[in-house]
Image 1 (cartoon, rainbow, N blue to C red):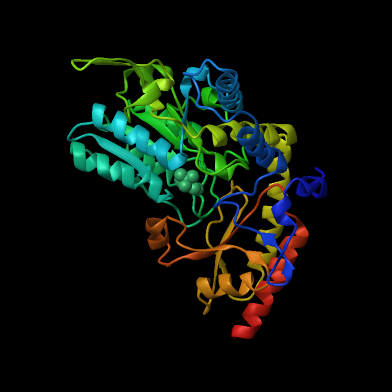
Image 2: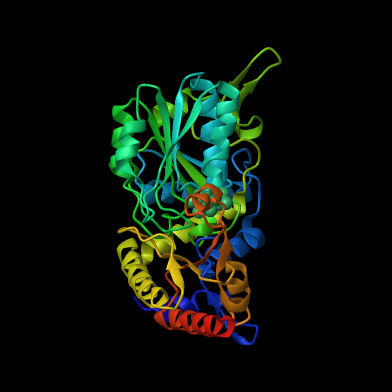
Length: 404
Ligand SMILES: *Cc1c(COP(=O)(O)O)cnc(C)c1O
């Protein structure tokens, strides 16, 4: 893996922040964009911006083809059976809301149970709470172990004929834990539940095969996988999507409208109401191609080396407590330092040009579980280097010595 060559593809990385070379370790919040993605946006707006699907003129046809090309790439990227199973959304939050709102409201009733985990992002908690309020279903939570792994024995005990939905993340944004989703899905199915996977933290880091996983739904965000903000996708098994009611109404989701009755379009358009985010969907393809071009095994190996190195060096620092030490992790190192607020550490690192995230990372219940308010989180992408980790460690050493 030629990281220096990869870094050249990311113009934003080559700048100084507060007088130092930028070290960008906030990839779990959003990743930077390579030139191919930036150029795809530029080409779209300068060359063939037009509304899609309905037009018969050349630009509209070109835009439609580019939009559908992304669906084509996305199908292969996650190995879905058909392009009809790929729905473009605004990202993981909207994908989860779509499932919760459409599937949840149509098929859940009082007494049913929805199982999530203690590791979930607020986006995979709150939509289900809303469904529970609307239907009378109950939310159950898989507890986590000391090291940030899910308590699988407790999960098995939670499952019952009442369980109708199991929704968990593939990897945790706060701790990096990679969950045993294949086993979680199989157990959910054995109990008669559908399985929803939040893949926000795996899209750029782990190979995804929805047929092998046998998940019912899988969610991705473009902006966390080198693509533009404002788009992402929902994969759903066709037979489920067929029987689900529309999520939003208007535009492309309609086949025929009369005042007495409206019929809905076929999949996937039934779930893509209104003019979609055409430009960003078009550019999303280039982000997926970028990942495929590097090879997900190569990316995972590079990031795993960074994770191992950072874990070793950061945990050796005085007063540091690592939060999340699961055996299987993506490149996320979350920690606290005794006697220093995470927010202060974040600010002092920023003054050295190092971008990390501090706080609860949209996982407040998880923080409660560790009895902390938040952590400092460094999260890695394919363009990060060991030298940058050395800069982080040097910064932390100075902060720790200065504050004591
Ligand atoms: C970022 C993230 C989300 C929300 O994704 P959006 O792109 O903000 O919609 C959900 N779950 C996890 C695990 C995340 O990391």
